[in-house]
Length: 329
Image (cartoon, rainbow, N blue to C red; front, side, top):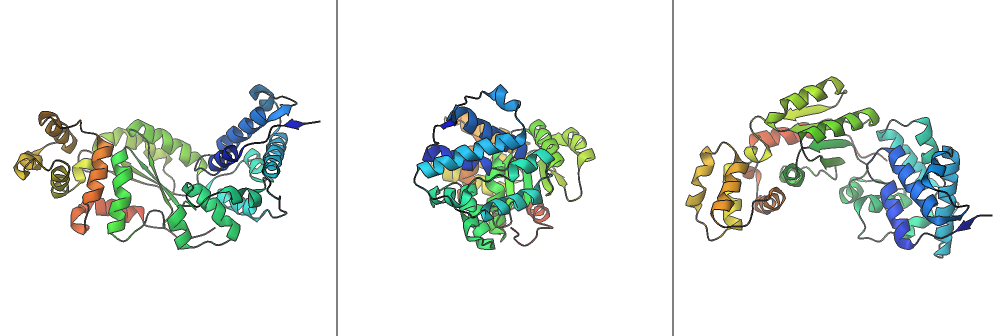
């Protein structure tokens, strides 16, 4: 006879969050199911290596039994409604290449219909999306609020692109969330290649890659694995900061350092690297250390219209938004 320690409300919400993140299904489900079983099945007690010896049907059965027991322990009524499960299954099959083992995970009987009652309005976007499935309604407005369903992945090297490209797109009349564009900052050109290899192997949806000009070798690594619909843009010169309009960079500097006159930014026009200029600018003026993420947020606050968007940035966004479809659930 089993002895189960119920998951807390917080643990249930964490599990729901992890189950619906944009990651490969097998890695995602196995991690969550393992944590639920090892942490909350008291008798018989199973360790991680015990679970590795179980088949996927048994792993799924144990995890969903513990999960649903925990919902009842919180006073929620389990429902004979698995429409949310069916929608998640269809969605995962739309964007991922699903293996036989993953299929077993996806056909779980977690009582999402009861679990979504725990999700509050201010939850992270994937949980808001999960809750919206309870209404079985899908609309552009719904996706604008929740991002899901994802339709295209944008892989970028750094945080500046992740912060600014969605903002530039809004100025041009496009909303990344409404169009289901999921932005991933990989943390460097080599990491972009690793992410691309992983996603190209498991995703059905297109991947758009943005690389700095010094990443041509990385582009050659990606090129042989490009699928139909994938696209790579290599920045014409330098890195993303170098294709920001100089006028926008100057406006941002003066916004952040009000006591410094416009004349101090004159050397920017001929600087070989915008980032190097900014690092030197802040260092020599005794201001705080230049940080890309922080500066990108200041740039974001200073974008006021199409004049603040360079031709190359417009080109990137136009290409990124090509071949998108109407919302589908």
